[in-house]
Each structure stands twice: as structure tokens, then as C-alpha cells.
Image (tube, rainbow, N blue to C red; front, side, top):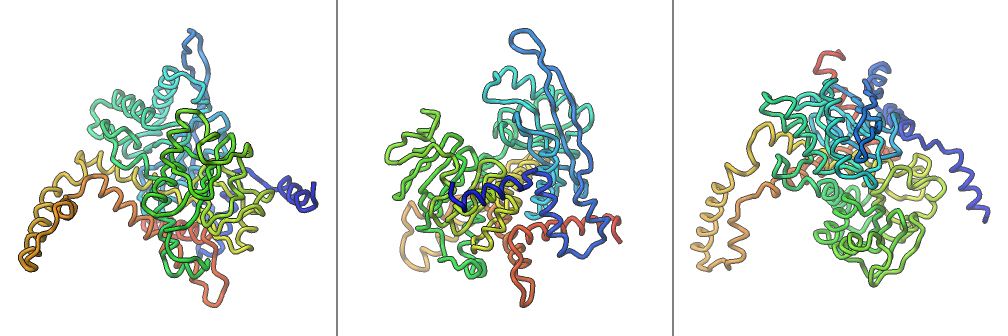
Length: 486
């Protein structure tokens, strides 16, 4: 082993990779830039409560298996609380607490009026039957109801790793069965199928949020100047680690709407490469059919799942698990910008190395906040019992048609039918969702950037620290308005 590699391995062995400790350290670093009493900062940092419980589920063979579940409530400065439910064998109390804290900060950054929460069950959904997963989900929901850890005005779960629309529909059905007199029962959870009270655009939300965020970074004059970027996404190269829901939608939208070129994708069993570009839609179809990325036509492969991190490109999107970029491999990163699609993919030690090399790191608490933003829209839709756009679509379409007719009369020229259709179409629900998501991500970046550049004559604050500063200040403001902090 070469000396640089040995030194990197030695540093990595000493690095603290406990996820909760990492989140706490990032909070402490940002808190130095916030003028507030230490006691109140400690309250914001700490997790208010964690419910840990064991529950039995009957197996297909007639036996009984015990499962462990969690629901952490990090902050009650806003109600209800919000956070996904993770199904994984590797989850523990510390991870759930850390993820709940990140939810508090994410919601604050994108101006979503929720406190942070998170839930989990220690189970591997890949090897568990659908029947048993349904039993686990329904029993987990019952346990949350029993302790008042779920409800439209109390705590609203959502999908996370290992869960999706199917599990959210089971949760909504179980909760509504137990609360038959609650007309808002289906607002107890988000990420549901559209037919069961979900909202169009939720499945793609986190990936689309990454696109809006990255596009703003590459077009905002201040961030372009800060990182010496060539403006615009068109023609840029990028790589994605993790090709699940988040990674796939981010890749697909960055290619289709941003005009960038996908050159590498990494998964748990290795990576594929093609400097001329990879079609993410075709690659996803291949993955679904074959169960792997390997062998996709036109690409070369590596069995090293971390090889994607070392690809030379303009943008790297780690969208897999936490602690993927560490002090042991940070020197391999050749991207200009790292956009964190996953929660906690970059350790503090690795980030310090990247920043010293002039590589921008767009933090998870902003980058992947698209999911909770659109979850907020779904929650509002459920409470209003009205599909977005239903009242205004035809009215707006009629007004646009009158505008087109007036333009034709003034110019004496007819607008082609295709263009007329685009100009006069009223907004669908998905159009309004995407517009709201775009505005939320762009506004958040501008707030973060303002903090980054706020030090007069000083070195700019890095994006992660600035994001935490924005979040902490907003939570502080909530406490002030509640009368807790004079």
C-alpha cells in the first residue's frame, strides 16, 4: 500500500462516523455564528423524545416474530412534526434521532411549518413477504396511535428508505380505521398513492428538488463566481451514486430538463461508466429487468461500488447512504460540486478536505428537502379536501385564451395550434406542485448564499454551516414568537 493510501486509511480509522455525533458537530459549528443563549441552543439541538417499542407479528408459517420500532420527535417548535419511516436492518436509536434533527433543519430551511421527526422499523423489506410487511406496517401504526405519535395535527410520517406509497396507504387506512370520526384522517401521512389522497409529483420530489437546487447554483451569479463555475447546466457532466428513487429521478431530470450528461452511475454492487453519456431511463429499465446495472450496453463496469466517487465530472450526486465520502476516499473526488442527495453522505473530515481543494459541497439539509416540501403540499391538500388547481384551471385557461386572441388581432397573425394549446392550458396539479417546489428550493439557496457571503472581508462560510445557521435562526424565531425566548 502506497504511503498516501496508508495515511488516508489511518485517518479514516480515527474518524468518528456515528451519524448523530456528526449532525451534532455540524450544529455546534453553526451555533458559533448565532447570537443566542447556550441553554436555548442546547434545546434546539437535543431530541425532545424517542419512543422505542417491540411488537409481535404473525409470520406466514404461523409463528410469531418480534420487531423493534422507533419514532423520534426532535422539535416541537412547530406542529405537526414531520419525518419519514425507514425500514432497515441497520437502523438504531442514534440514527433515528439524527434523522429527526435533520428534518427539523430541512423544514426550517425551505420554510415548511413542521417540527422534525423520524421513524423506523428494524426489518429488511427485500427479503420480507408483502403479507408480513403489511402486518408490520399496520401494527407499527397501531403502536404509534396508542402513544399519540401520529395524527394530522400531531405527527405526520412519510416514505423513507425501504418504504413507499404502498406502506403509506396501509398507514392511512389503519389510522382512519382507528379514527372513524376524523374527517382529516388521511392527512396523518404523506407520500400516499394519488388515488388515496396523495399528490402528483411526490414520487419525483426529492430528485426534482436536487435538480432545481443544482440548476440555481450553476446559474446564480454569486455562486458561479464563488466556485468559479461556467454558468448553466447544459453540457455539464455528472455522476450519481445510488440509483433508487432519489438518484434515478435526479439523474433523469438533470438530463432531460438541464441538458447535462450522465457519465457514471454507482450502486451497491458496482458502477457503470460512459464518457459519451448514459440514458438514465434506459438504464433504469435495464436495472429493473436484470437486477443490476452491470452489462448495460455501451458502458464499462467496475465491481467497486465507490468507483463512481472518483469519476472526473462537474457534478457528483451521492444519493445512497450516509458516510460514503470519508477521509479515506475524499482525495479521489474530482467533481467541481458535490450535491448531497442522501442524508449525511459526507463526513466532516472529508468535507474539510473537499473545501480546501475548492470543491463546493451542497448539504443534504437543503439538497434533499424537496421530499418534505411536496409532502407539505400533500398535507395541505388533504386538510383542504381539494385538488390543487381545480377551482382556477378553467378560469385561467379562459383568460389566457382571451390574451392569445387579443395578440392575434393586434398582430394580424394566427398563433399555431400547438403553441396555442401550450399558452392556453390551465395548470394541472403537478404544474403547481413543481412551481411551488422550484420556488422553495431557489428561495432557500438565496438565503443560504446570503449567510455564506455575510462576513465582510472574511472567508465565506461554507454552505453546510450557512444552512444550519439559517435553520437555527428560524427555529429561534419560532421560540421567540411562542414567548419561550424573550
